[in-house]
Length: 454
Image (cartoon, rainbow, N blue to C red):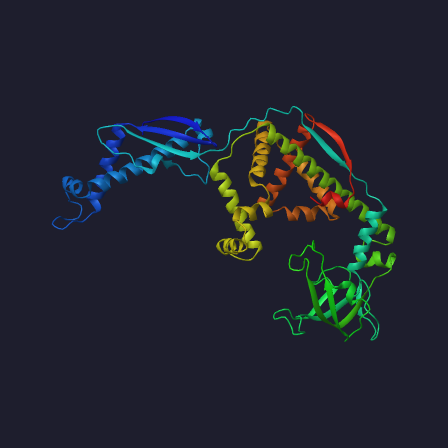
């Protein structure tokens, strides 16, 4: 098929493609289509396969031309996009070429057929401006406080919960089971406020009426009426500035018996630990790995944000829509519902779908641009990884996770999983190169816990 084309780039990484199909191919396409109909159609008064072309044209002329026109457009687009020089003008998988004004061109078998389609292509990105980019590296030290916090968490996980003796009072950090209900001014129960068997740890504030302090000193099977006035600026709008009367009955009081911090605890945690010192050393190593991983993530995000800002480009509308649709479907899965039902739930709560996406998934456009910049630079710099480098990655992962190299390889034996590992390795090599082109400065001193807050 003889086809000529003219491509014009338009806004938001879209193109307008005008193609012209030679009249000889138009006539040939119409002739073949007509012959196919003549062979397969059966019209009263004629034997199948013997319907005259003139009769077909008279009866189905317009629909025949529309079908031929559509087939010619599809065939010519496939031919154009398969040409060697078409790499930069191929449509994105989720952006089908559409006719301008959605209008099919008129087909005349004695003339060339010209049509125009628009569609989105992969953004053309030039990452050239590195001027003034400075990445700050948080300064974080792992000390006794961080190790002791982890040991405390291990104690909590290995604690034994036992009932306190009858007659012993509720104290802070006790685990209590209570029945409660809100009372109206006349002493009657506020409908819908009753709750039985509610369990929480005293001092955490993890109860609706925040009555931790008020139940301290109570005993099992004791009932108490609590009147509590809440500040006008209370974080709960249902409580702010109000006075509530609550009836509480303590049904059970338990205490968390923490194990001693000793060699026995270390051995209970894992057979690989012989002493408490072994456990502490492992904690320090694990925290150091987490710290370095998080700092690397913070640095990389800062670098990409600045590259996006200094090297602006537009995203295709269809790319943003596809990304948001994917994120919305993932959100629906997390909420164990359908995308349609999730949208109804969000709307009924006074939010919009867009607000929800930003809240849960962040700025999708910024993330897309960051990914595109990374992919573009990896291609431009021709970054690849060798089998030896992948073996080194296996060893690093094994060391960081205290597992064997064979276990790591088993985890990545699936081709797709291994492809993710290879992509990560390429990105890490890219960042190593980029940090040679930008300034890395010492950032503020940061506590280990604060490192993970954002």
